[in-house]
Image (cartoon, rainbow, N blue to C red; front, side, top):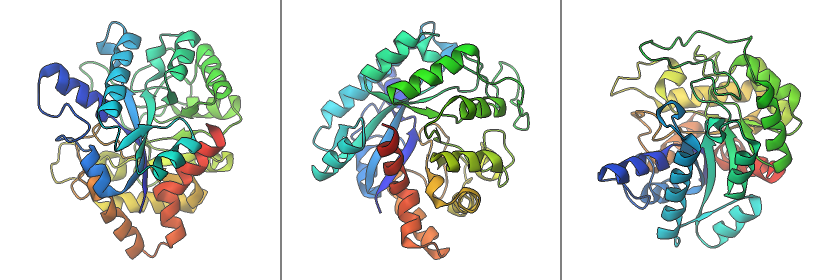
Length: 331
């Protein structure tokens, strides 16, 4: 079964390994959740590679983001016989015909643009086609629910229904839509979600989020949010992170069941239909998942979905066809 994964943080981890002189500084083969060997075993059609920037740790997050993009393109060039850049649906089909996995360039935390639409347009010209508006800090574009503050344990129950997009944030999503970029509301506050909804017209995505009704964590989506994404023609990428699936302790080495992933897939589908569900692993941005340890293990997810009684067309929709439809519609 072909796989389209809407979110991983692998490039940042490769960059860290290269910077520190550690093993793992290659997309071809590494000790991470995602490399080409694992993706081939998992039968990947495409992978979104997020340039994750912890903006509070970098004096110039835009410059740091450019370093990650440089690593991304270097790895594509070094492995050009197996993987190639895709900017749209047609590129995916062309790459598949050539026997190559498609790589999409995305960004996690729109703060890298430093409040500049010029920087946003520059990133588009460099190939970026999806941006997660916020991470775990207020960033000039908008506010998250889950907030990281030094010395404080984040409150997973806090829901911000007041602070959403800033005035610049509304300009930002308007320009993203004009350019033909996919708006990603994962991490965004509840108030911000509805401001995206009311200030845009095209489908948007929550690339790596789950159902709040299945796991009461503020990183997840309410039923009303799921319905709005579905009605707009958007997509929710189910996140494999155990604490977002069933509130398991993030430090537990044996955390994570495939059953919990399927529970979220089934629940989101029951609210918004199978057309609004995809996969957003968050591989290499999470500590791990016991039963689905890396990209090579995706056939195990297909097996559990089939044993649950899901139909072939439903499994195909979740695994890759919904992403293809979204990219064809928006990019």
